[in-house]
Length: 507
Image 1 (tube, rainbow, N blue to C red):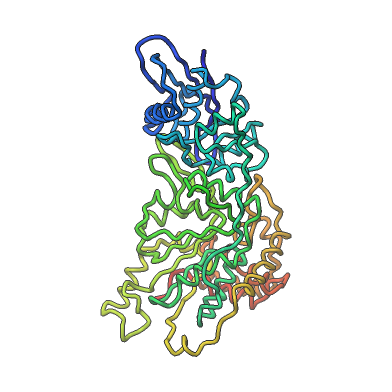
Image 2 (image 1 turned 180 degrees about the horizontal axis):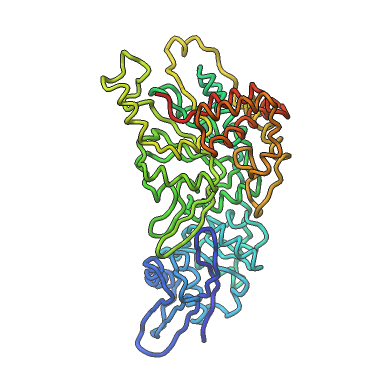
């Protein structure tokens, strides 16, 4: 007899069906797993052996063969422990052959037969739901699986609890969907003293989904301004929250963490490698640009990042996807992010202060800024200088406009864009903003006044804008007009957009 248990294999954000086949045969005792298992799957033999012993059973002295079908699909991860154990216990007669028909099974076994959390439960639940299957998963992740919707979720804490449920002794109640966290965390914009021009640039960036670069001396508030941005953005829709949670699930989030409708905010250290930023590694995991999907990717000390790592962001910023191509994997992760970057004008940071600037100025600034490639800077719509804030300004400045007031204006501008651009693509796609709308749609709604068009042409010639920069300047002016509740782009809107659009950081 061959016992069969259904489970899944993960390839990027795709879950593929896997049939776990367990056979007990005569011969010398052995426990063999075949079907391209990785090290974690191969080691499941010892975890399964110990967990079965922990519930008072012993493996039969037979030849045990576990086949993970299809055999040519690589199997990675510890979530195969539970389906292997259930298949083995079915072959031993502990469970009936049809006890787990209609279920996909994922879970890692501890040596005492408890179930440990595993990455990808949300993807497995969506896959099971699409195939009209239920899902068996660890209890701590039952709420995550139930949040996916239609499938029947069975979330035991361990093998004994699962056995009692199947035998009818102690049924396991269905888990409740994990509560959603609707609140973004971070400072309030009203706590930022001064920096009115930078706060205005932050509002424009939030309104249209534009990339932003802040340049200023140390301690001028660049990082604090960036951390205010998520609270200015509208909360994720249920479809967007599901898309964000799928990326978090496959990357191995903390078990039991709530679903969230707050925009992601990722701030990797400047020592991050190219695979850490765009994804990759041995198992082609998502990188920071995908973990920030539909949210904010903040790169502080921008020139300190490796140039190769920074330039690897050019394609995701342009297309909204990160393609990870490796010899053993080729996966695509979503990467629709809003890039916010901060940098000092030079290595010492005090280029604009003759009393503190280093003796190599301005060559110091030229060398420092040369670490950033032109194509990357061309993808950043707003370049804003953040000057030093004096102690007297901090003591005398009145509290600024709170986040709630600015967020209300941003929400109104985003609402105009939702009405303007039809949502196209798969379910869960992000609504288009001025920064991301297709070219034909943005062109149909620009409504440039004659004077604004003349100003745009002069700016393109004097700033020597590329075709990309020219188009991005029009999109930026559209966002400024939306904030002003104007259907037409006026010269004042275009002039403000031009003031943000620089070909290089200030030096």
